[in-house]
Length: 605
Ligand SMILES: [Zn+2]
Image 1 (cartoon, rainbow, N blue to C red):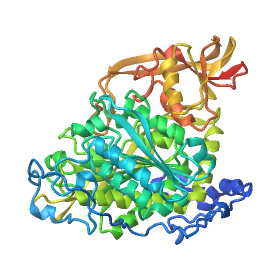
Image 2 (image 1 turned 135 degrees about the vertical axis):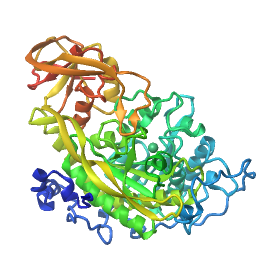
Image 3 (image 1 turned 90 degrees about the vertical axis):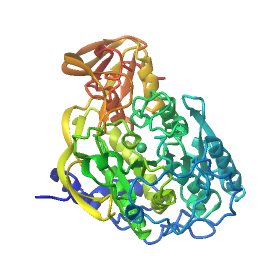
Image 4 (image 1 turned 60 degrees about the vertical axis):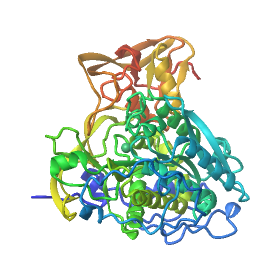
């Protein structure tokens, strides 16, 4: 018998958590918060986005009403200078004309540099840089709009990674934007170099925000855009960075300069919403395993990892996913939960996006941001259907921007509420150390590669919507780290984690780890071994409670802070994503779980 996965968020949660998930119960803490604020909290309307945006506070009210676009419209612009004709002909389609006919071009034509007729290459890094500067200059011609192009880091081959900041705050530096009291949306494209549609779409979005039909949303929100997270991979049309690492499994460890740049940007601009734009494999291993071509214009998933606040998941589902699916449908674009499958052809299981705290999607969730993954059908098909792929991305991202503008006041209150809720859990109850997906059956629609007709395939399906707890421990008050743990301390601080220094010798009550078994191995995701290079230490541990002497100059990482769940993911040693397993922390004795609030003198770093 086949059971399809439920669409309602209620049934995506374990039964024990359904009760008490009623909107009113969840709203109560926010309502209390709102009582202290001059801005009344709009009513919580699950599943029904407001018909019109709530009015902006009087001081910020724009001269004309802000109406987020109901459907994607692109500002007509003069055609750019034509590029020389393509040096090579377009590669033949990897499937029949009948399949291709299922994906007609959209009515709108996008014209970024890389989408010009006759081009064979996507937008180059130099063209992206010129485009961002052009948009920043255009944006600031509108009174009140501030724009900056930031150099946020360098790729492994030395390309400058850039971000465009657009705001109506008094300036583009983080403190000024934060003080303006509006949510910031961070949009990231092309972390995987062979997934170009996200990057091209973000150039379109940048132009629409700077000088086009999306400009009114800047009345309500700030936007930071990194069109291309992995320029070296893009130049080589490869998934990984130039050093061979998958940067989208590096967002907790921060071994690559590319992931470090994005972490620094997120730390400084503290986004309320993060969108990660990718593309997925259309033919390849699906044709080999199932004899099918993949069907959906868009695959979507929010953060699904251990210890996320329920309210965050609920906001992602009700404020973002539902309007996004409706926006896609209105454009005749199909969608499904994000899924992938292993590169092992004998393994026919289909898995939703992983539950490990290593992807941008999950790590930004651990930073209490609404974190959304959007994938278009594009890997392995070159430029085929590129206008439709970009249109899908533009439609989805426009929906996210509109949802954020509609909910700007609520989101501005949601974030401090979540930060407070997570901080308040220190020393209490349990923290999940490791969680996994739930095995299910799913009827997944694919396409017949010859006729192009829908083909339903019953698959074993790992659902990331209901997490199974694999390992849990009492949640500590914080972690002590040895004085030698400087690399780990630097990485935590790059995430925005507060780390303190032990100012005088003393002692703490804590649990020390003792190794009971250890092997080496590779990090795995649902596709197989992660392109990573380094072996990991897979350790099993027991805990010993005791009074631990802590020298001056060692470190303390309190859990009564917003990033507490990211700290747990990094510092509990016996998981594949941990700093210990990945040798950022050396030796189990470098870390102690501190089980009572320390009374010794600590100082901020
Ligand atoms: Zn990707």
